[in-house]
Image 1 (tube, rainbow, N blue to C red):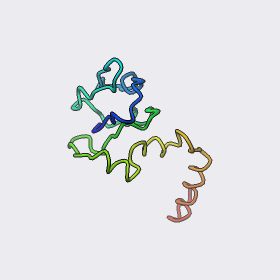
Image 2 (spheres, one colour):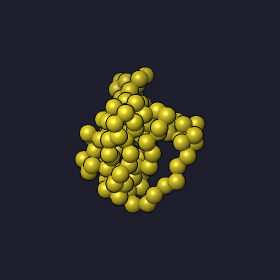
Image 3 (cartoon, rainbow, N blue to C red):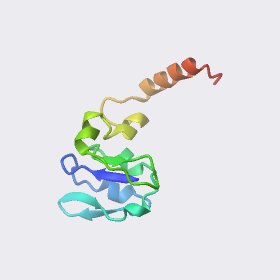
Image 4 (cartoon, rainbow, N blue to C red):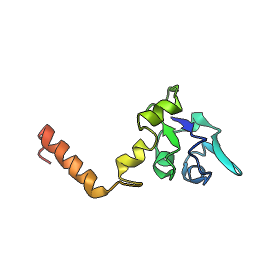
Length: 112
């Protein structure tokens, strides 16, 4: 479930507003969007994946709220974590992810 829109990181591009399939956010002209309908969040991570400023945090639970501390999320590199996992954003590359996945496959002994 969406838990945070970082006021300090958000660039007010409203990409999250436009990509959210369940209309969770409301745009606020000149400011960060607000989470207006949190209960409608499907935990699809589309907003977090598309956020160019890594200003969103979507918790993994679709049903229970999670209390989050932005400073702790920043300290543990959780803002933008999903996007980086996809290989999107600065410093990320699909070849590096493929290499990582290959190493994981070898570790677990997968035949695939």
